[in-house]
Image 1 (cartoon, rainbow, N blue to C red):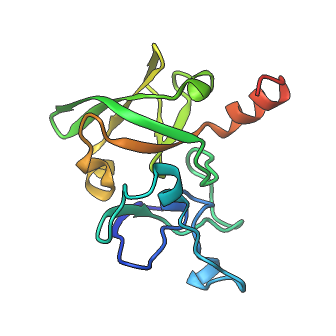
Image 2 (image 1 turned 120 degrees about the horizontal axis):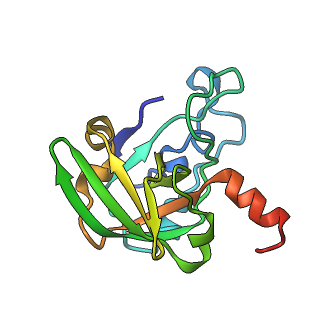
Length: 171
């Protein structure tokens, strides 16, 4: 599905923050019984980082009958990264994110990484930083259009890498 940047209003939680599988709607847009919004995005980034009116990425959860056409993401935040470098090239943006030490092993060239709920392909990994390219659609439909050097972002590492690391006993 397409990511949509939405404005956060007072009292509204950002469920999943744009990650398939992490949002709050079931099939046909209904909410499951016992549904309770979780504002994990506030906890992960720290109190005060988002204010009423702040844009967030929202995407409804996939259903089991939806076709899979991209990376596997769960909607869980593994850590916080920071925009270390950002340069515009024509209609795209090249962004390098500084990963926290604990997540660096899980980043691989041509692998995936989820930044603020948007699943991206990793173009390069070097010195604890991952390089990604933001295409015009991603820039136009997500909060990534507002990134500047120093922006703190939620990170979910590649799901397969997370399980391999666990199976190897390195966590």
